[in-house]
Image 1 (tube, rainbow, N blue to C red):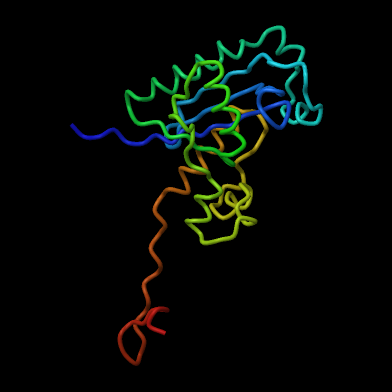
Image 2 (cartoon, rainbow, N blue to C red):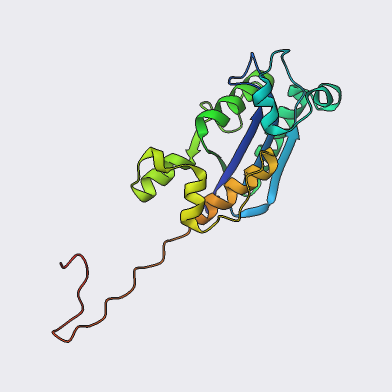
Length: 202
């Protein structure tokens, strides 16, 4: 029996502050790179009275509505864990974020706190888009912003909306494009003086 393929689960979080615990994750989106039909989205009831107005404003979510109507953290994270575990029927889920330190911090903390463990593993770690781009392109960290990567990949029409579900889908598309094999360099034309030459030959 062949081993199931890895599934890169693009994750995006909106939060009302800089760290989990004192502040809350208020929405969570996930999408599988290369499988646009595989998505998950939930909003979450805040777990703390503290919040940073500027952080809350980024998402555009109404905190009062979340307190009234959103699933509790336990409900939301249990549903998220069930969705990730359901992917195991077709592949091996691997966490993907941009940057992984931000989204991963909230997601891992919430899974451990409200579910007891993370479906992505003990460390909750995975692939960081910006680090992946550094390795692929040889660029510096300052050149790894998602807008820069999208421009290099010709994906400038792909929006970033600060809606966790939509931004997870955006990240999945960027990573899917990034993992496609690069086209081969154009063949050198034969010169009048002899066989074809390449840059390496010079």
